[in-house]
Amino acid sequence: MVDPLVERIGARIRAERDRRRWTLAELAEESGVSRAMIHRIERGESNPTAVVLGKLSAAFRLSVATLLDPEDTRTERVRRTDSAPLWHDPGTGYTRRQVSAPGFPAEVAEIRLPAGAEVPYPAAAFAFHRQTVWVLDGHLTFHEGDTVHELGAGDAVELGPPAPCVFVNATARECRYAVVLVRDEAP
Image (tube, rainbow, N blue to C red):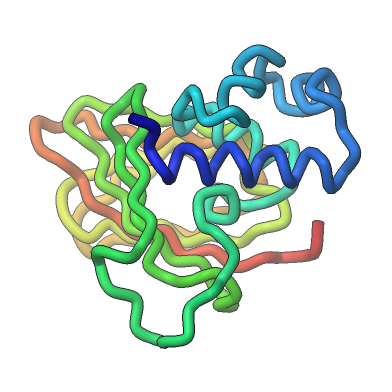
């Protein structure tokens, strides 16, 4: 059985690639993701990892949330937990739930990072965005380039200029945090 969210992610990536008139080879070159993997994702045959989504979002100059969330077709302003897109990283068990809907000026996501998990993102994934990471529960070791931030529940960090980042949960229990993102300039 194919996961509808995985199919939507694939369709969104294909639509973004088509919009730019890029071949699979061009997107592979821009993102550092193999043509074969991009092809499997676009066909809904593979659920991309957080690392792969980060690379693809960087190539498109879009946020990860934009690749995960469909166009806004809601008529209600209330977004129920069960209707918000929930994506699971097959590589780490990381989950991401979109709190804000498409079209809202800020993107808000709730992340659950399992014990022992580590998720890296390339610097380009943070270009054209301003972000705050706010730890809601647990402990997060956040590597922002050469700087390491140790964050406990209630702590927040505003990201500086684009740098490679790694979200690390070195503890024995889940870490839950929110990412709040606003676009700095148009892609």
